[in-house]
Length: 367
Image 1: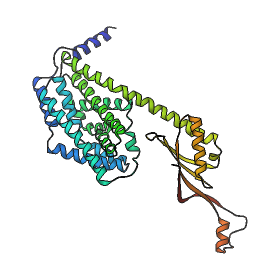
Image 2: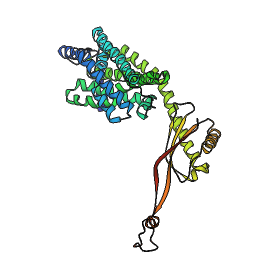
Image 3: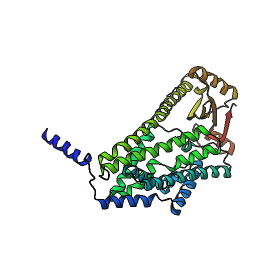
Image 4: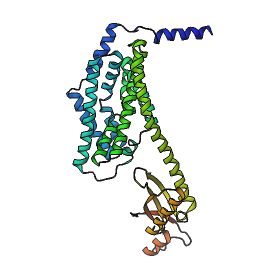
């Protein structure tokens, strides 16, 4: 018991004392360093432009590797740390500089991605990388808080500063902005706002955890932390309301998709002669669009698709639109090939059968 009390007393003196634990020189050095990182100079905009172009093309091509490369280049993490330190230290110049960099970088990224989409005239449906950033959840807030804490510690502890690149990948600040620009180019305002919600989640999560990291490192005394930390925490909790709703919606969609798969496979005669390869549901459309890839020995007709849609509407209590991609199966045997070629050297009775999907794909869709 005595050792526990001693530990608690030591922690209280360390983290909740009324004074700073760093020297004035170290405090000034940290302030100047963060101010220098937060300046929106030419290099900052070169990195913003480059990372935005790479991220936009990566999103359009649905390439996770390209998007990760854009995250490494994006410099948005730096002014966020500056704003967090400026709020704690009551430094208006640092807050103004960081906020200006964030505002200009955010606007530039959205505008460039929208212009790229319009100029390239991409009339294709967006892939999973875009859709994933259009439905933020509470998990994204947890990632942002954790990554922001690591970013703050990386600034304080030079020994782990190399982890900043990995932190930038984890929190992914640039892709949500590019997704917002892509949706705005198609006038999909709701989806664009969802992408901006993800960006705001990352922004507030990083700011909050960076503030905690700077406080625990001794750069700000406890009496100076209360108000800014409480305000930032309140904003983050308010942001958790739409994120919680989105999480609930995502859980409900996963539950519906599991029931949808079960209904199609177990309760329909059609799927007794089909082999289901994959099933994906686009919940952003109204009604939700279900894309099914199947192997079949015979043609899937529009009448069958209509009957399946009516069945799902009754079973699930809501309409769905089915889109089938059908690969026709054909059977090829050794005997047939030999008869065609006139080859009599194969012993009678030996026969090999192979069933493989035809390369010609048939899409059936009822509009």
